[in-house]
Amino acid sequence: MTSDLYLPDECWECIFKFLFKDGDDDDNRCSFKSLSLVSKQFLSISNCLKFSLTIYDPTPPFLCDLFPRFSNLNSLDLRCYYGDLDSLLFQISRFPLNLTSLNFSDQDIFPADGLRAFSKNITTLTSLTCYHLETLNSTHLFLIADCFPLLEELDLSYPVKINYRSNLLDGLEAISLSLFKLRKVDLSRHCYINDQSLFHFINNCKLLEEVIVIFCPRITIACIASAYRKRPIVTVSYSITSEPDDYAIAIYVWSNKGHPTTLVFGEYKEYPLGISGLFSVGLNLAAVVDQESKWHSRVGEELEVEDQEFESSDEED
Image 1 (cartoon, rainbow, N blue to C red):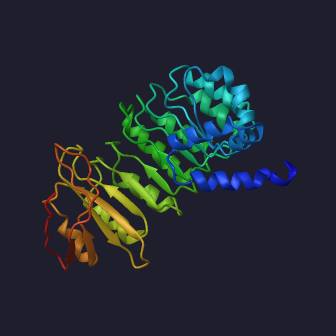
Image 2 (tube, rainbow, N blue to C red):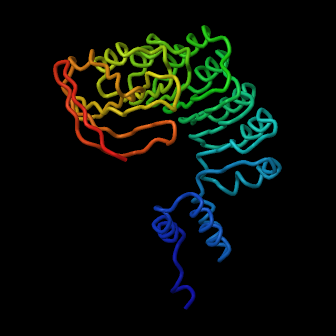
């Protein structure tokens, strides 16, 4: 009778995936934990369905048990680890992992030595997220270019302190030349970035789909317009002002191929009329920021730009 009711692991795996596919990570984590207590079979199946792992300070001594247990891990989150990050990455590099995503944002240091060791043994990384680092310099950028050539997504946004800004421009160029598969890059709050830096990515990264350069005041409207003409399917998020508490507006520009290009401009009264002659497009008022509120995702009335003429209508919140 028992054998008649037995389901193979593959069937249970499909059932679990179906049940939890729409839940958030926290809900799924609790659900898998509950399932793992039902039987050894469920424990084994739930272990195989865990793809991401967040490492906390007490975790490193247990890595030898965790990594073999979760054999399908592809993502590591180190944001909540405040120990020796280089040492941790050395440890991780010794395991035969097929990681595609690594996040060490909000850290006080850039773990250069650890990343070198990590990259020698784990060559499958396609996403690197390290926003809001305490310090960032050109050496770090050259290391990324040298160690992770297969990256498709790179987030270096909102660094706290930037050192040797002139050399950082060379580092960004190296990244644009080395990361030939790059599809998305976020360089928000890199205030040293100029028009040439943006064009390095537009020209060198043939698969590029999105560039985010919010609060980068050295990039000009003329550069954004030129980038649109050269690569109309690339999404560029950009603001004129250098501070996030100014009014802003999201402008969606649709290319001939039907892909949207997004330009985010600060100071909504200062529309770049100079670029409107390049194309006739539909605009959606999608986001407004002021000193008392965060971004609000809402769609307003459609606006039309044609031959240097601009008319707008705003909706009340």
